[in-house]
Length: 264
Image 1: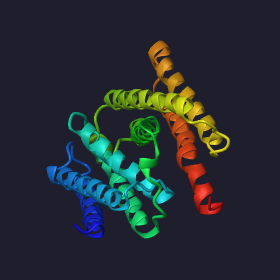
Image 2 (image 1 turned 90 degrees about the vertical axis):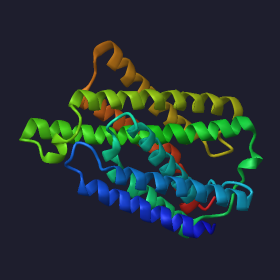
Image 3 (image 1 turned 135 degrees about the vertical axis):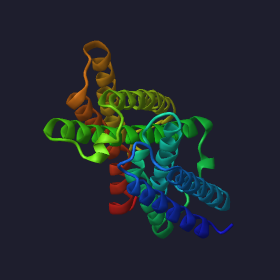
Image 4 (image 1 turned 180 degrees about the vertical axis):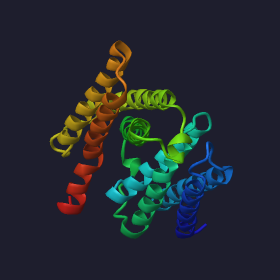
């Protein structure tokens, strides 16, 4: 199948799912049609990436292609989480983002940088890095939603959207579950990077490594504080967002500067 057609159908399905979520935003559960549309969008997005990979005999790790891959994984992880947890409303932010990244990839994809040139060890590092970032991306969005919910409940009678969300304690529990899973994968990513990347300075990776380690320290400290001191609320939200911003700068800030500004 033509990959451009697949990508276009995926984009339309992402937006259709978003509209369905918005339409049912004040209900306790999102209509199944929204989730079916999102599953279709992610499936076509994944198939598009697979076809392009096979056609080019490798994956393009350029800025826009990597952003598209991450957005697809974030959407997929959200849908998997929604099978057992009430997190589907995060799709109102995630699905349009995935569609936007796919649009950018279609229009601005660079030269292919073959994955086949890497060893299995480097593949492990790359894939765990991407999945860790994706999980922590969802955690950051969950933290933002938690902040809005907390503010609404304290300030004035909450709107119907806030009333339709799970209890605050459940939302916090989901946040820490996502942080725990993301931290495990981030740990694997960092360890594999130290073991298999020979020269961080020569490969312009030192800033990425430092920022990722700082994020790891913040997430680890937050989980430890939760376990020992019962940290929650604003503390959890602030630490989560700070850690995610550091990861965002590590994964995409440096890539943006190197590829789109310095053209390296």
